[in-house]
Image 1 (cartoon, rainbow, N blue to C red):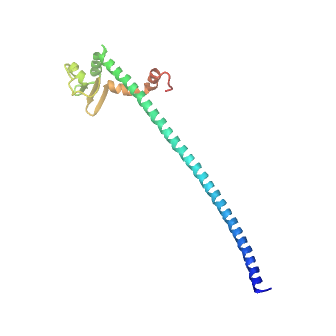
Image 2: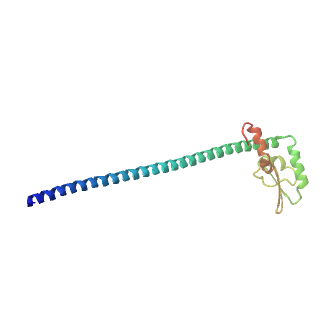
Image 3: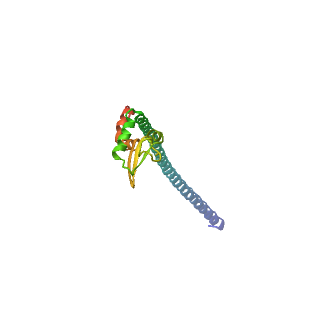
Amino acid sequence: MGLSELIGKIRAEGQVRVAQIEKEKNEEIGRIERRVRDDVAKLEEEYRARVERETRLIIERAMSRARLEQRKALLSARWGQIDRVLSLAAERIVKEEDYPELVRGVVERFARKDSVVRFSKADATRFTASPGMDGEPAEISGGVIIEQGRVVLDFSVDRALVTVRFRLASELGRILFPADVV
């Protein structure tokens, strides 16, 4: 075997080896590309699932807040109506025929000589002509407040309605809002 044959044989083996290395390189690149595609697909799926889960949570929170705000608005409106009914009741109590006699009776029964008797601004002119009924007007819609030193006896219409308000709230609710569950 001559030098040129030996060089040809080495070249041929080198070309075979180059082709083999090229084939191994292409196979390795293919495996890496498949692994990268699989990893990217897996990451995209995980990200999509995470985005969907977080979106669902955000929507659920928003809907929950909206339901809460709606319920708060409805309850506020209901309490507003109940307060309006009680306000109308206070107005009607003060306009009743027996109201002046009732107030005078309370004052006669509970006021002492040293007591300060206070009426609403509207009632102050009506009752101040009577002895012992000359206190400064109080911020009440009706009734009377009797102060005996440190003791305050509150017979105001407002106080009576506040006391009754929560006790009668469910009954008033059923009357005012019969279609709803109160």
